[in-house]
Length: 197
Image (cartoon, rainbow, N blue to C red):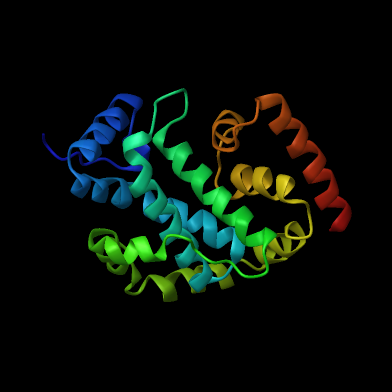
């Protein structure tokens, strides 16, 4: 099989299915999943936490879980992209629910040198660039601080809709909730946020 060379913007469902088949045939093919989705998913996590090191931990856990479960991924109306955002959202929720976030798969990461190599390739100058970008968004940081005071269910939908530019349909797939619920959560969450501001 030929390796795919796509970006998030050009990936369609058939290409995603082909990539999943490649990952099932050879674990090394997961590097393509990582290359395509790491930056958007990491950015989503960083915008939710505003903590670079924590975001690296959560992103590592997200992609490790995806790497370990890619063979069980079933195409049931949810894209690979939505599945990755769902894993990241679940990891964020674990972090916000507990006082100490402990990635459960670190031992497995050590046992999978392929994943460790992929994660270290991303580090470079990324920290400085991402931290500068975050500091440049004073309004964003003010809103993010207020957002953290809302219930998780509102944080999720607002972050996905306005920070990640996801449609209600995409958010529905990521959070496994119907679109009516997403619209309702967005409406109530934004009202609560406006009252805080």
